[in-house]
Image (cartoon, rainbow, N blue to C red; front, side, top):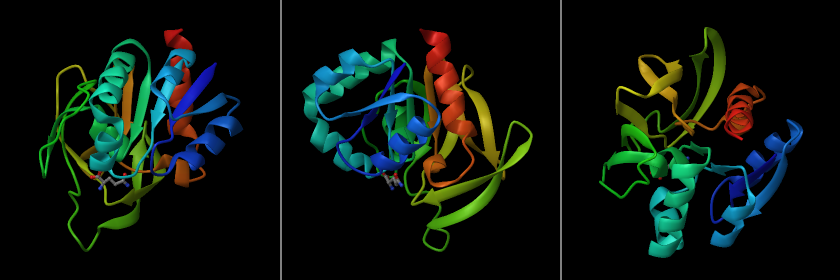
Length: 186
Ligand code: GLN
């Protein structure tokens, strides 16, 4: 199983380490053609507007084709990229997840914080960094984890997203859920 980590910008190396720790073979994806060699893709945190700029129209299209066909997992900025609707300010999304997501949604004071949420009935440490908030989910979106009343890990078909940074905590369950998804989609 070969997992790509989009390595254009942001926090990609912590994802690489976590995925390798869980036994996956990882390639850092810097060129569109590398998407043809992988079974699943992680889109890391960073700055979603910067991702869009670096990708350009061609990179965006290629990525959109990939996420329609193969499993993808976006964290934070990556979650924003996978959404159908982005607000604050509005920006283009890949449309792989039927969610409305609001960028930088937690205001200044709790701009970045470590909070305890719940994943499938068990507490989980969650690191939020200038995090977005999922404000609305479509009927086919499954909630895998919550923090307070907010859905923070969601899945629809082959696409998965977390609004926090699971690669920065010791708990490996979110990455493991993605690897299971890739395995079952092969
Ligand atoms: N605030 C960033 C954005 O809007 C996301 C932050 C992150 O990925 N940690 O794209």
